[in-house]
Length: 568
Picture (cartoon, helix red, strand yellow):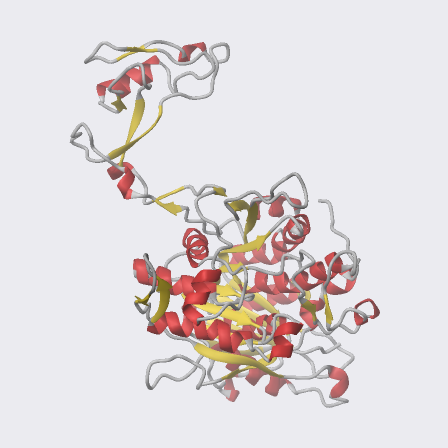
């Protein structure tokens, strides 16, 4: 498989492992919860802070649980003014930290910075995604080729076969109704939503059928139907048995296929369709050809989704946000209906949905709208940093608090806005509440600093084990059940029984890795006791394919995790 090279790749490929775990601190005043309900990580969640730190903070509680991810990262057009803030200490990054990423002429490394920004975030998103989960990323031609290469590596586990099977496709959607050929003679009127699944088990629902398309003009006893073409693509030279005359048995009208497009089946197949009254005949033989009936009663609730969406302009949500917030904050937010359509075709009705580039909160709005529409129980996790760019920072505009959370709060409770009336004047329009709730949290202080700041006082095994068990289960551990020598922290009965292990030695000379031998030993010990294992360790010495083979062999799901601070 071809590999993508960019400045800083050698460092950034493992950077997500070294990002410190941070606390998530609740803000009850900014949360929107029913009376008496306390903030928690279990329901809808809006997190203020750097999304790299927030994603790492979510791992203990959300890893492997997210069914659908949608992100709308900077397209890196050169005009967005996004800031590279990842605090890497390697020499090649020092000149980048805190710098606005500008136009190509001003910044010859903006594509390298974009790749370095995306790579660790996509790796953490992979860990958060469920095995049957799907991720969708909005992008345009500026970084489409780089994004494909990175996602092939991350979601293909470095294997060409996996990359090919886990790539679902690219949805192209229309961005404008009028030509824009100012810069070139080609008007670029589309953008993409790049779709990958974590494994071949990834869900992809397809679109809900439009029942209004089904009619019953001839009162067929089987009920409403639509018609599909009865012609195929085979020429007379290729498939002569598909080129013959069809006769309407009632009117005796004769129909012959075009030489380049034969019927979809041979004469015996057509005769069977006629006998079963499954052919629709045109009223005038000169204005059409017969078609095949497809009945609503025989049609799945969902049909395959098209990869080209010409009927919706996704980048047209500015007026919608203006109406909700009463002011213009973003120029090109995604339309709620566009994001709702993406989420609907990519996730079940009870899905946990994550957007770590939340912006104006369109994904949260779309989740609530879908739940209101179909009675679903989807939940969202939105992550948005305080300032998207230096202009917002200078203005003191906290995007997460004043835009993301405020928008979601208003659509939960309902809102109204003023719009012009025909003939002059204005009128007030009321929008009904969608209902729902959310907890507001912030990325807080790191749980542990780097090992060099501990001196010789690394946290002991018991301290780290208690922290891990609490963040994983929200429960305190029974100290009597912990077994440091084997690494066992404790068990829960959730999900049929989960055992938690910590392979860690509090010194700077010995690493306790999780390799094939260590995993086999734990699986043997846990035989018949646990259906899932969560194993924290200092290093991971196995390929995901090897782990998956052992999981299938023992019938136990394994989630390996690195200890939540830099030991080495």
